Image 1: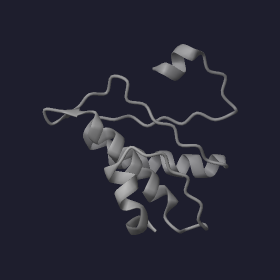
Image 2: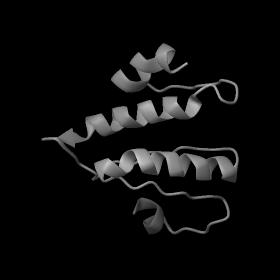
Image 3: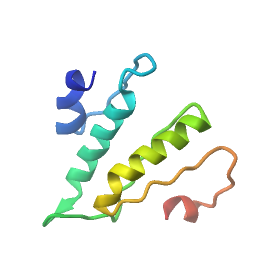
Image 4: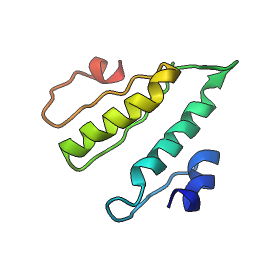
Length: 98
């Protein structure tokens, strides 16, 4: 699936809706789209983290934890932080914006 949507996910800023069975690669497609966003925030070989925010919505807490672990590992070399927020949490607007 990743090869079918690569051009849109990685080389354009178009919105996407991806529907596919479990294990088809939706998380990898999300990573491609996230890297495209990071690419747009690169200046002089560095990521400008000001204003760089992305939201990944997962239907289950276990999946959210898995995605946070994968994305954290892949984005750490770029100095990016991945956080998990669930419906169990009470957050202020300032905490979400941080």
